[in-house]
Amino acid sequence: MDRPTAWELLCEYTKNENLRKHALAVEACVRAYARKFGADEEKWGVVGLIHDFDYEIYPNAPDHPLKGSEILKEKGVPEDERRAILGHAEYTGVPRDTPLARTLFACDELAGFITACSLVRPDRIASLEAKSVKKRMKDKAFARSVSRDDITRGAEELGVTLDDHITFCVGAMRAIAGQLGLEAGGATPEL
Image (cartoon, rainbow, N blue to C red; front, top):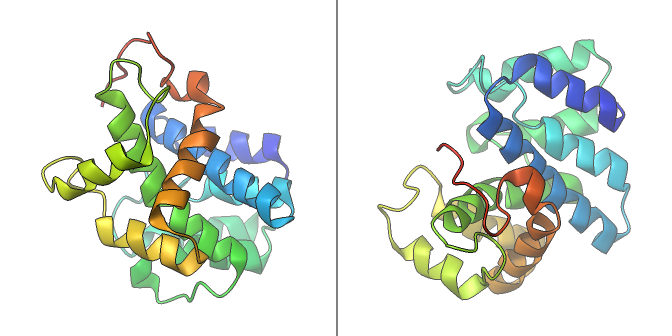
């Protein structure tokens, strides 16, 4: 699946603008890791973009991502890409046994948390640093639906320090801050 087709699929199933922005944020992080690892950036980016495409219509486990995987299978998405998407949800039991699967898992929760951290800052993501993100991680009331354990485990599975992982993903998201509504001086997006 190429990027325009993936975007079309995402928009067909996902009407919520914030969910689309989340998909873009995860795509940016996963693409950046693909470049770093010398992997197929287009393939990895598409997986990051569509990993939650079914969430709006199937928000409950285990429907998401299992039902979405069936839709992707019908659309000809290769098994390794579908397995990476399935593996981003711990409860599926699908092992994260490829670099793509580990990267998607590592970037998913963190991208959401970085977005939340950015939205409460006057300059949004422009000057966000790992230490600020880690400080917010200690506040269990802040972005309470984001799993801190998944963020930490994701960095471990990638074999990088949490600080390096956060810094890397902030940089990837900063590069598309305008698309994410996280540019300095921008209006506060609806949460």
